[in-house]
Length: 151
Image 1 (tube, rainbow, N blue to C red):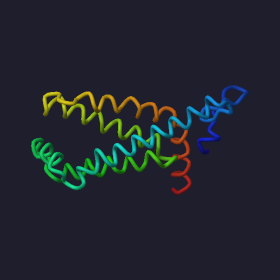
Image 2: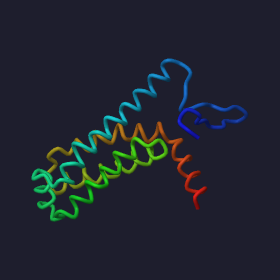
Image 3: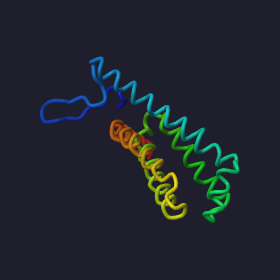
Image 4: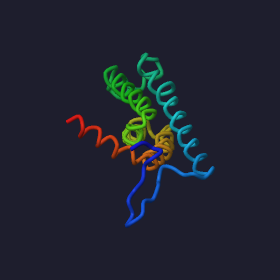
């Protein structure tokens, strides 16, 4: 089921969740898609890229943690994969959940290893990611259907 046809059976009627014929519903879908694009750009360019090119600002932090370049490249690759998956309809909800989990880890590391400096950033990012995960939750059923078909 695509985002435009997602619905849930409720008793004898069907309630549409991801589609609305009203202009307000259309604006909400456009705003949500715009948010996904902005977050994808943030994770790909501002977060993953410095790690993947071993920018000194990223390398210093990972060296201080004792994770070295392997940890830096791993986190960068996970962020880039999440950024790309945010733009793929069948993966968008799972990507938002995975990036949220990554942000929980970033928050914990920021608090424990860096004295809480910039600790609010990962928490702030969790809010729009949670919104995307919830609003696009019908894509999880689509993904499961696709995986079962391939198995």
